[in-house]
Every structure is written in structure tokens, then in C-alpha cells.
Length: 221
Ligand code: 3PG
Image 1 (cartoon, helix red, strand yellow):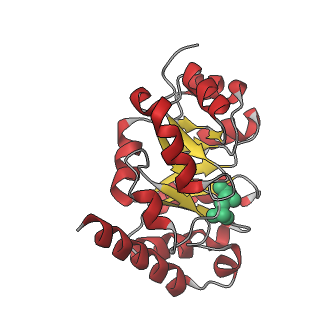
Image 2 (tube, rainbow, N blue to C red; image 1 turned 90 degrees about the horizontal axis):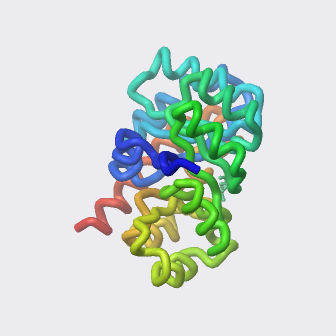
Image 3 (cartoon, rainbow, N blue to C red; image 1 turned 180 degrees about the horizontal axis):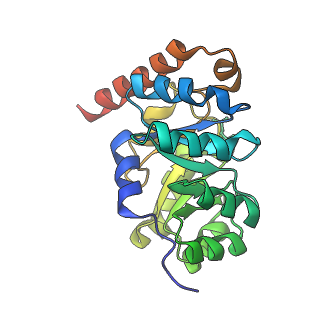
């Protein structure tokens, strides 16, 4: 299997710059612009739009057209159809909660930056064989969180593998993850919750983005 399932430099640069990827469930593409502007206002112009709703692809298409300054990826890519839809709507990256070799291989063929989910050393080794060096660690908190990532750095650090922990992460535990050298960024749904989006609580979302910037500033100083 080829070794080209590595996130493109542009995407990894975005992750390293912003350090948090909001995981979004959007029920209606009519909320797309409001959500985009809330993220931009908060200084966090990146998001994973999960393919759990019919509105996901349309949201990415609309925002690529109207708010191109955002970097949007497709989340919850569970099937080859999801992956093709992600490519067609212009997602800049795709991500899944688990590791499906068929999807990895198709992402390589479509030249769509894809990072699969892992939760065990066996998953990590399979991902390495498939050429993936950026992995979603999911569900991070339930699987041991920072302690797990520290424990596995022994055998895997020299491979250059990086993790995007997601699942149970929030403003209280974020710093612990971001301080690990193997973590370019974390993902999480706490920034823009489903009900905040449907209730158009845009200022609340922007405020959480700003709070993230403060956390990052604190751990970088
Ligand atoms: C995901 O969709 O990747 C996770 O459900 C996000 O996990 P969280 O809701 O605990 O942030």
C-alpha cells in the first residue's frame, strides 16, 4: 500500500496554527453562514463538518463559495459514498472515527487528505502500514486521554506519528493535550454545539473560540 496518506502541508499548517478543530453537527444549511461568521469572529476559521446530517455537504459547498477563508473538512466519513461526497463538495480534508482500509485507499486515489481514527496500538500499526501519519485519537478521554498518549510515545515517537485527540475534550482539559509534542491539534464539539447552532447562539460560539485562543496563549508563554 502506498505511503501517501499523509495530510498535505497546507492542512497540517492550519491545524498547527489554530490547534483546535471544532466538530460540527449542522442540521440545516441555512445555519451555515451564521456558524461560519461566529467562528471567524472568534478567530477560529476551521471546522470538521460531520457527515451525520444531510446538510453537511451543502454546508461545505456554500461556505467554500461564500466564506473561502475557512478551512472545512468532512467528518464522520464512514462510507465510500461519504468520502466521494466530501471530495465533491470541496472538503479540504476528511476524517473518520475509525480505521477503514478501503476508505484510506480511496482517499489516496482521490487525493483527499484523510486521517482515520485509532484507539489502540494495533490500530496505530495498521494505520502506519497504510501510510497514515496523522491519526484521530478517538474517543480520547474514554480511552485514557493524555495518559494513553504519553504511554504510547515510547514505541511510536520515532515514527513521527501525530494525533488529533477528539472525544470528551473541552476548555478544562484541552491544555493537557496541546502540551504534548505528538498533538498538533484537538477536535471537539464543545465549541459549537448542535443546539447552539440551531438556536443561533453565535456570540456564545465566538466567545468559546476566544477562550481557546487564551488557553493557547497561556500554554505558549
Ligand atoms: C466526534 O464527533 O468526533 C466526537 O463525537 C466529538 O466528541 P465530543 O462530542 O466529545 O467533542
